[in-house]
Length: 369
Length: 125
Image (cartoon, rainbow over all chains, first blue to last red; front, side):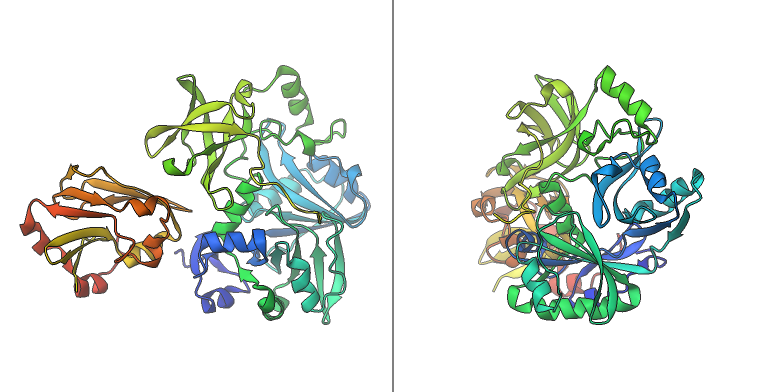
């Protein structure tokens, strides 16, 4: 491991728990604990899991024109959220690529926070500073804040046991600034697993005590530490994109099937390209395939074939612990994007049958039934 | 008690009363993490030492398993199709891959003993 890799404020906790530590985006992160990826994954689907996501980056934005700034840089329609709202959005480029996908948090029209991918913090920071024509005061607080996520149907029980005042998960994609046990934090009704959950953003110095508190409170509910391995399979099952796999600087927001996150006629960077691409039609689009368990799992870069000819390529693939078969995100020719369409995919050098599906592979359960 | 011998590539071959069984070491199983799929050869297939003999998929990765010696496959562990996780939980027992006949038995002496394998610097690759 690179000895310059950054340890999060929770590094010692992971080591004490016996985690397998790996380098990811310049950080030393737990990829799995002795529990193992499959059980960690199922804990989040059936009970509750806790994640250290402190590698994620936090930017703060402040100024009279902050709202305009965010709408200019981000492709989603910012009018869809108000104060206390959170929105999934992307930095698109004028050439049709994506710089990053992120969440924006609107405290009020003059104050925003952005949470960006760890691997892209430096690039994003440069991107938002390059064209800052709005006089917005930008702060990169990535190395000062930790992010602890609690995800799964039993999340509220854990937070209630830890003495949090507001634990109802009634409004996904909202956040509030709270003081819990004298500690200031952002309590966000967000996550990237498809399950109910909260993400808590705290200063590094407050993170270890909060982790311990949640672990103690969650004990009776089977709160399970979850590493990046299961985070990846959870987001894949939930049909959520990962930058570097489904998204990159040569893939457009529309190709990634994210038009729901495009606010047309808002004048964001990259809108002209996307409008033109929409009019001309897409050459490829993000979809999914499933493969029977007996064939194993499709993996990134595996080629897909339809009627004997090339049809696309896998971007992320893994065994799905919930479905008990192989699942994969892939770019496909748009004419193949019909549920149930039979195709073939290369698995360990052999072509095996696969079926086209529209992600998510496992339905989101953000609201109580 | 079976005698275990190891290849540097983390496969074992166990000898017990003239029966030879192969699989992957506990170290290898731990490194891979949760194993979700094992592709095994057909009984009767023959492999030379170092040939790809089987493939193991964990949630995160796909790895080849090599024949530790020249061998012929007598029987494979069909139970791994339904419960590949036994490779993690019991690599030297229920998690075996195949019963084999070494076709060049002198190669067995070149493999690592259990003690030597335990002492091997496994990070050197």
